[in-house]
Length: 405
Image 1 (cartoon, rainbow, N blue to C red):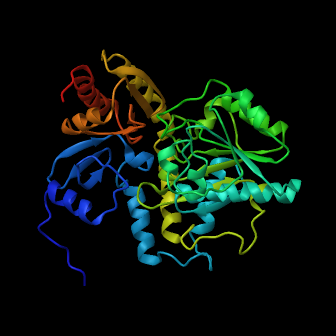
Image 2: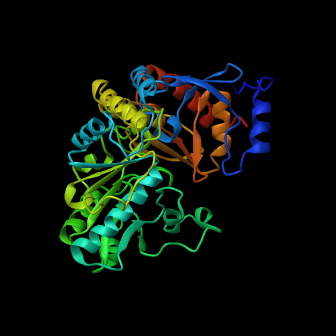
Image 3: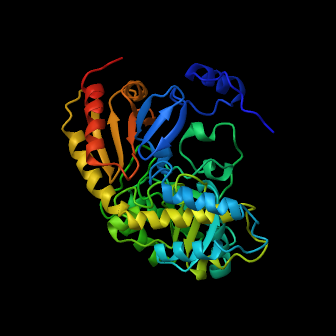
């Protein structure tokens, strides 16, 4: 039996452990979380914080939602994973419920968001070959995109730091400015098989496209018989005040790419969801994953989907998000350049580095994170209340109006 090692009960001791044994690919705030419940987390020293990051939107339902915990525990007692070599009784139910959720008829489950994006890329390329005879397929993507960290995906990133030292990269991608219809039209050729986009760019700093741009993309894809693939990994499942961010413009993509909150904050679960005429390009042996759609993941996913419906989380996100945005705009700060967002996916762009403000908010009991240096990202769990928003705004106002560092 492995015994727990005691003696590491301070923040400093765990920061030291991470510095000594961890790889330096993250720059976390110096807080060591021990437990979470709802919108609150506690560190190893017993300090309480309001989480305004939600594990990059994985915790849409709040930490340790009882329905998801119960589903995962019950399934773990029965069977954790039999792999896709066999069927299991949660698998078909999960795929049926997720397909119905999305208004589609086929689901290909994976684990992480990046895996789902890779799956969508493979699907688009093979669809282009089988339906249009395209042997050199091209996929159009947008500047400042973030779709994951695999070598293929970072190859079409415009963030040099994500790419540096990892080449050579996979060809077949064209990058155009986000929100520029003319550039998109110019990029379409006879070899184009798909357009891949985030309806709202998260890692780029909560960049919202011009009104109507998603409809324009849908029109281009329909006119040229190419696939619209919406990466709703971060924006989906209620985060922006709608089930999907595409819903704000009444747009239905050909493929939904989903992850993060789909696992209820407990289990990595992702999926590509579309119709059979696209996803049936895969046949046995052409694509797979040992853990993709495994028993525990499907149980978590089913529970998460039911919570989103039962607790009206899309509606709550829209209502509380609008309330939060209004409160933020009442703050008179010399450091704030712009406040933008939808639902509970909000970015506060500063005219200076955001990291010190995030560190100051941590000391005030509120956890958030900077993105692209100059933007504070606020994305609390969708179960947050207006009273809790007021608690947070009081601290945000203190930090933004008076430089405390």
